[in-house]
Image (cartoon, rainbow, N blue to C red; front, side, top):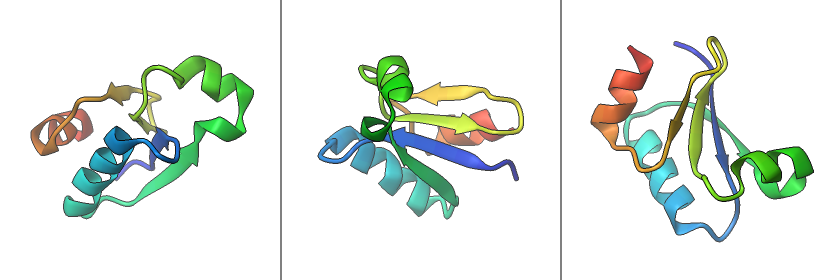
Length: 74
């Protein structure tokens, strides 16, 4: 299983929904708050939440559901 990073920020209801979906799937993710990094804020500011695989750097942008995440991981 690749390491997964969820780019998000606080007070983001879509980010909370994404985290809930991933938790329901029992997927471990590293959550990174983009507000703490100017480069990440510039890159993802209007596109969060974003799920990234560290093995191949592919990204899955919101909206996504369990089916989309399963496809993304296969």
